[in-house]
Image (cartoon, rainbow, N blue to C red):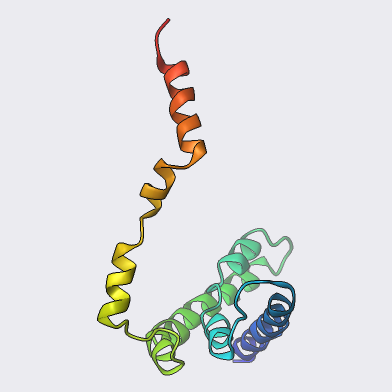
Length: 134
């Protein structure tokens, strides 16, 4: 229980100052408080902590590994399943209007954008030079 609350406090200790720095230094749109809530709530689900626990040296390795696995499981269940509700109530994931859906469908895909990019043309040229038998 203590580890779970420490995890939540640790997330907040990284999300809030990090968002503040991004909002101050970036030219892009600022992260709104409801978006910061989603960042805090969703987290990484312990992937980095799990890798660190696997490499933990010493006699307490098993304790660290089992605690980490427990925390990953608990956060997946307690914070993973309610994520759609948090998105809905924080108004981050609003249902798009039909006009917004049409606008999204008109936007070019990454594949279409990539075909016209200079590195795509260079890649085709290099493949031709390398793959053509001489």
